[in-house]
Image 1 (cartoon, helix red, strand yellow):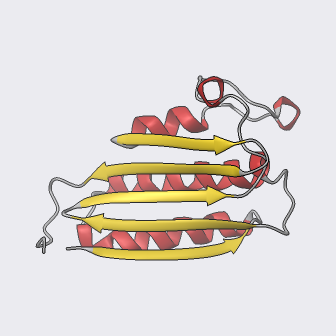
Image 2 (tube, helix red, strand yellow; image 1 turned 45 degrees about the vertical axis):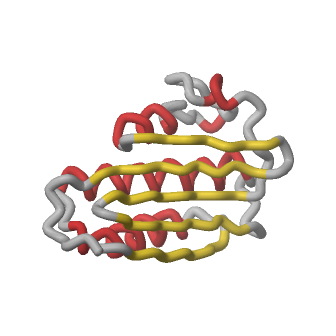
Image 3 (cartoon, one colour; image 1 turned 30 degrees about the horizontal axis):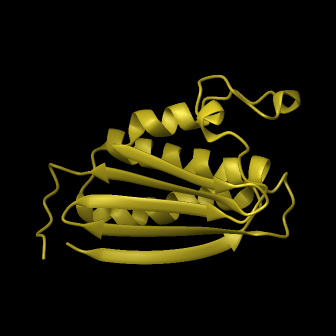
Length: 146
């Protein structure tokens, strides 16, 4: 099965659950296990929350773009903002790192994302935004590839 979708939504915390449900519905044809579904939803939550809190500093007047593609049972999930950007991506990927300690952030977002996905790439420029491209193979998928 090959399929693709894009969606753009306001950078408000209520849309984090919208993004999770949207991706969950999109990958349903891959027949994910409950664990895989939970992992994908968690990854979406982490990436969208990072965009809202760190990229846009909670300003609701911005947009988050989410793009999903399924090719031959592999999901490519891209989440992008046009926010502040990450000064040091490698530091941000370290466990327990947070740029918002006053908000009691755990600093585990990228660690969780990297543990649940097969590959993760982070592209970021200061004052230009951040794009996270994540991939996961669904080997047991019952779908027929085109």
